[in-house]
Length: 495
Image (cartoon, rainbow, N blue to C red; front, side):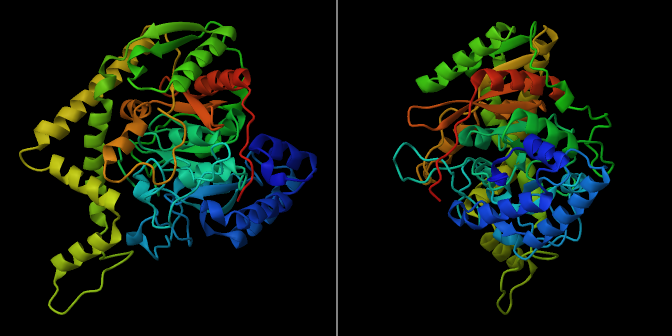
């Protein structure tokens, strides 16, 4: 078989079971593609030795006839996941040289399922960003181009390396994390599928924390079926994470019937934003028509507190980040600044953190520290938490009224060029999360599905939001949407 790296998880799994190929051959094809794609800057720590060792072990398991779904499938791991003996820097200078002595629960589950780790993927520093431009490794680059324009585009963020690698067929799938849209926005920008499961469905243990009440891991894949296969391997109760849910993990792939007759799909009026490009509006209404044609009932709904979601998110997330990032002080691990004679512990903290954190991380730590400080705690942080409760209740009311899923755009635009959103106005960048942050604030599952191209030939995605713990049902609705949209476009190779 040629072009093995272009296969999805389901196709590759079936080829492995039939004996049409081996995990070693699949892995070699991906490693070759990775080495030829340095221009994308997607893989930042390559692990070919680990990959080949795991591929050989997977082939043995498959021969013995006791292989789970992910066995032998080569994937990339976002640099936010701690991987034993492999640099795990969260794309930050402050974690330079850090090689954990342990494995994150999610990457361990994937390894136990027989998957093959090809290496670590680029991302925004500490997952703070929407364009993968805050990374210590430099920008990740999208494999997509606008028409005949050579301008480099963002693959989205913070899971930009994951999105770029999956879209460019450097790996069959990748892990991502989503705190305010960091799986769904890059998936929409690159024509791939990304699902953020319900908060608590995947363990957060061993994943470098950004905002602990919002962070969730999830898969980034080439199709909805692949997302179902990989999500099942990643989920499950973990006693090491107090927020991990003690719930059985269903067979998500078995739930993909494509039958959504009688399902109620809500269209929230508050997501019709001023200045939203016509192409996004048209894609949204086309998506609703596709679901209607598949037998679903389309209903208008109201999520009244949506307009407060971004401000609430940008109080809560930085507050939790400032608390989580206090541990990076140069004392126990990672980078320590060079000190001069007479410098004490305070100077060590100050110099280490000033050198180690990039501008965006510094900005969010300062905002977070401010909103948690005496005199401002009630005015900002507590008020944002109350707004979060109201946003969650909006969704609960809609689902209680019989709505099964909610359809929205995934992003307010197609991918933009690297450097086009200036650091002078960070709020412009934050607006990229406008359709996605509500899902994190409410702890719900959300999935981005590629649904069309804009006039410049760039992918556009739609988002489906589901009921808590109903990922199987959500994936099935997404499967129906994917089948109706028939998105098959791939970027033309220029790298």
